[in-house]
Image: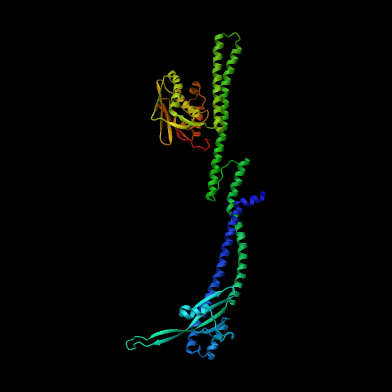
Length: 497
């Protein structure tokens, strides 16, 4: 079963079958058309030659008055010669349908009633006809025997010829044997069969060679991919024999680069997670050891140390929660809960929760909406997007700074902009801000309690909505994040970013 499936689904087999069957079909059609053309041409040539000789004989019959006196040996000899030449039979029939002469000598004096003969008598020259009976192997032809008479009324002196009248006196009916044509055709068929066998063998070998040659680049690609799969190499594949193989190789190389980048990202992620989780634990251990080393420490010192330990535990808990949220989004554990959401109300609620933080940091927080916006979104995840962007804008701001949140929409998307007058993001760091645990200013991030996961979570949530997020920033002047999300969620499509 596996062998059968391999043969049926093999590209090499399919190429072989296409070339082989196409070649056979073409050769059969050509040979068949050649044989049919030969037969038709041979029949036409014999018919034309016989018609020409029959017209000449018909004139002789009129000249020698053979229909009234069939005793002319010359005419009889010519008729016998014509019959012998074409291995056929010649009948001379007068206008009363009586057989005047039969080269076979069996129908003379008898009356013959034939549609072809009657039509020939009625139509004259237009009644000459030929019919090929392939089944019985003969060609039957009729030629009128016409007498031309001159009528008075012409004027020779003035160059006006006499008028003529054509009178059909009889019909010459001839049956020509097609045995020579059939014999030649059979010889050609035998030769054609030999040629067909030779062509079949050549096609078989040629199809195998071409199929192997055409599929060889795909075999090389398969072997290279298997080497990468087995771990023997991680070099890119170079195969440009065909445009298709080049596309496959390019696609695999891009996948290889992405896998390598993902592997590097995983290693960096593990190292970052280890470092981020280890830092609070180290602080807690140092604080705990300090307390242990001072058994008679005052209560105020214990309280200060315990507050520090609590802050470190909260920080570690925040890191763990953010990591769990990222894992859920990456693995699609939590599907989007799409509902109709009033984005204006949702944004105002987020702003209301963050205003106490803005007041503490002396940052002016404003919201401007161009029009009411209702969209099909996951309310929880969109709230998290708005919260992360606005909270970052507040925390990474200057003294007496401002944060402006704008909301607008067109017929397809709604746009959320979060602008601030903060410290800004260096140009070289802007392409890395969505990476996990990446911090532009690590010291300030730890000071304000950042985990380095907020923007990664935000971007993932936006992409799950089939939206986009862009950043524009000038160091020392401020930053603007622009989020565009469809008003109508593309139902039935995956939400994997």
